[in-house]
Image: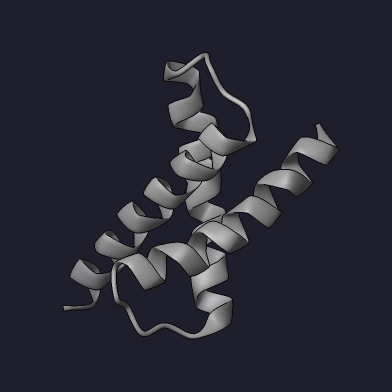
Amino acid sequence: MLPSALLLVMIGAAAGMLATRLMKVNMDLPSAMGLGVLGALFGGLVLRLVLTAGGWVVTFVLAVMGAMALIWIWQHLRR
């Protein structure tokens, strides 16, 4: 379990960076990586239960989608 959790953290950090760039959000690096990791946990674990096919590419895509969802929620809560 530990290696897969570490992989999700690494994928999440990259996904957070990509999600902030795709959404054109100006966010500091630690915040972007933190949201990405949370997004990876959400996208990689919860949504993966629905999709049985996978691999690291699917996990990365779901992590980016999860990070983008969290960024959207974060932006709306700040207003």
